[in-house]
Length: 402
Image 1 (tube, rainbow, N blue to C red):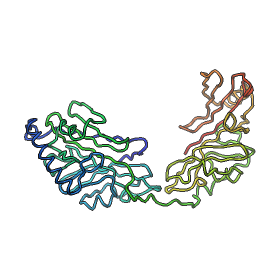
Image 2: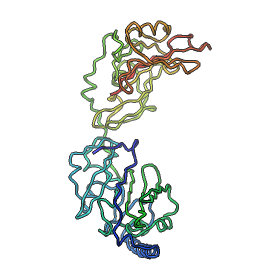
Image 3: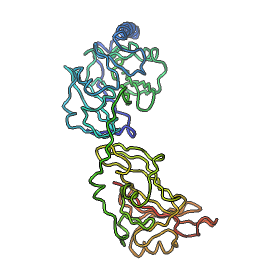
Image 4: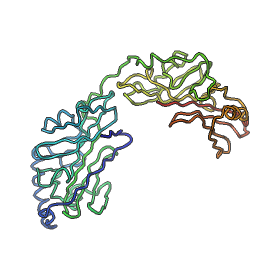
């Protein structure tokens, strides 16, 4: 199973079935309208039992049980659903997985997501929605009703639009018409009405928000072993391949713990920093020393939420318009040096590099780039307006991401 991050991937692919039965395909528009009217009556009865009339309430009724999304995993399984897939699934904060569940003779896919601060097993997480398709769940098996009396296997496109209004999006495919209603990127109802049968067959309900009274977990201030084991270099390396930087007379190997920078006099500005950072996630930290400022992303690779001091800075930048302090990179590359001398160091070391001179005022050099966010970047000032000396290094940056 491939897990998804809620902030980066919110769309699930609906499984396409092979069509409807002959009985279902024989429904005429008039019969569909009649069926929808009956469904509306059923929906009214369901509403009395707890089913809403509003699609944006993100409910669904399966037989005589009403599901409200989001809901806790344990509450979902208490309704008779079971799975063998969730036993060893651990989710990071803001991550979800699609897990298959069974109940009697039916199957569905459920969105299980972790909106807490710490890593959690699937069974301790939230069910954020359900996906029902005609491949795993045949029409005619059980009764599935959406708010307003929209019944799977009975409602057509006109009935859905008459009940819910104009969709947020309509997709016309060769096999089906998909109507999407959404309140935001993480909350939507999708319904696929198949061309052959003319009725609603696939349903996808998602509401990736915190349930009322949700406990996001506690933040630990325990210092991680990796942070405690970090050792500052005694001197700057001569190798252009070592991700190090000297800043304000101190040498750091990147990534560097925030607490190490704090020990060297860089005070955390609590008003301009995140108070806690989720497990496996990142936040912002601002450090100040005199009138100078470092504002960088702080990364927490641990399985539990913690404070910024226990996180890591993966990038340091000195010089330029941000941090008016000398920065030195391995090999003696430093702010204020001539561009020709800098390039000579790279050439003498046999270090390949990329140079971007598309700007009228700057040249951008990148070297020792091994992976994404793992490189050195040097900015040379090429203008002549008095801010920096022409054709000299104005800014140096070292990045080394986990």
